[in-house]
Length: 78
Image (tube, rainbow, N blue to C red; front, side):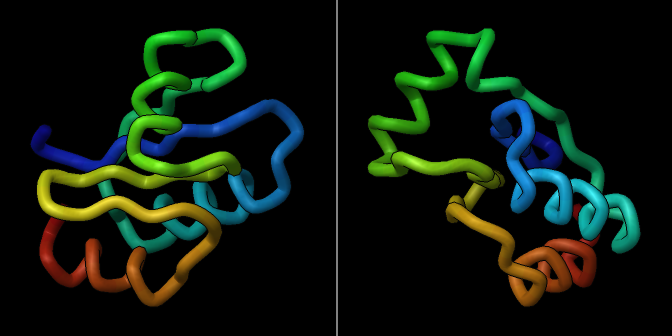
């Protein structure tokens, strides 16, 4: 994966602010809707997450809006 993946659900406030922060920081990312992608939902559950958003990169993943981690992605040039 050359960029980040943002796993979201419809109407998720933390998903929306995470996406805004990714855009603002210039982070390249793909969006995957967990409501319409059963395979992605199983992947997120296998990582141990039960809430959105989930961010996944080559070497990290986390859940929730975490501006410090988003800033670190931007600094790393993701």
